[in-house]
Length: 269
Length: 269
Image 1: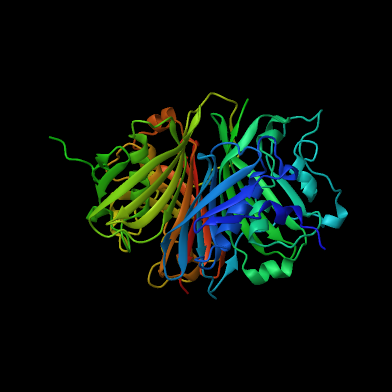
Image 2: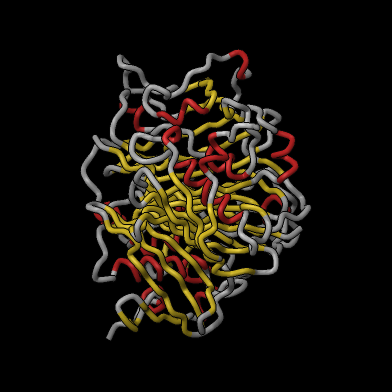
């Protein structure tokens, strides 16, 4: 009997009715408050991709972390608001006892063979095998499930100074090398600790409020990746009035841009 | 009697009931298919900011262009899915005769005085007065309402060649110098023609499917701007399988980063 991987356990959903799924939080995915946002994104993508009416693959997901999800069961309500010939618009909401915790919209669609090019450039960094393993495990429980190797911008320690750069670049893979599928890619897009930590040189109160991911990888690219490291890089553009925005990219070792992802984050101080 | 500016006319909404507003399309805002996406974003922001329960200012908007809006009336349904102490999560939908054309989520919130810094750098370009006026008026009607002055990456002409860069940088202001408020800023975030035009050296079938804007400007920054030019710059990261993503920034002449904005776009060929 094989043990269920914590990722698969956490995105497992029961069908309550045609458009309602029930999941539950898992303690190993705990964040500073509530669960890791990435695992909630993963559960939403999984809810849609396994819906009988789902058309195509994930192209975009916007998730709004409206309130912390409490430990225990949650319900996801789903609705295909519009189905076109080659794409489909979903509206989703995660609630607990009728209390809305998360809102989301998702775009799924059919990928067609067209001209293509990647204009962005991956950061130039050493291979993961040349870097030391170490992430924010001391701060958040869920980080223990990943193997993170920072090339730049690791989480500030006790004696850290403010940095002039908010950039973090790291190799990251599931610690048990579970394969990267769309839910896993959605989760990887949220592995970055808040950029304000680097600029302030300290761990402070901060949390993602809204996050958007564009999925560029097609299924063959994910299949080729298996459970290998991806190269994740993130930076902030502007900090002001208690909020900042982050833009990030997730690359394969072979130089494929798997996803671009953006978020707006609340911070204190 | 003063004439209503076409922008104010286009975002004018009637209250049907507590959470329903009615608007209508205006021919001067016509795009290749349906209305200019920016004016739909503007109407949604305006619907929320004038809702009696609205808390704070716009922080983020995600709008999904699910289907073309036909000429005529449309209804916007609004719901404050979650109101917290300092922020509020909205869910909105635009429909015509019960048919969903647009879905959206929006984050509004209170701006507080905190440490701040802009890490991004504005592109280095000549002042607008040194550049020639000219935008995509030949392709889209709505462009006639803006004064656009391209420093880089103008829309390809008849004899254009593919460009290695998808970047466009332009100064843009409302032609009648209507002041920039949040609805106007939301619209300015969508003034870019599809990046595929530059890379393919031709005008081709393309359209934004989902777009997210992060509003950095606070009210005093908008007030200082008045109706002046903003500097708008956009680039694509990856083109593949019939889709590409665009990331863009909108700057004030004084170097304030007013908004960052991202979108995923469908393209043919």
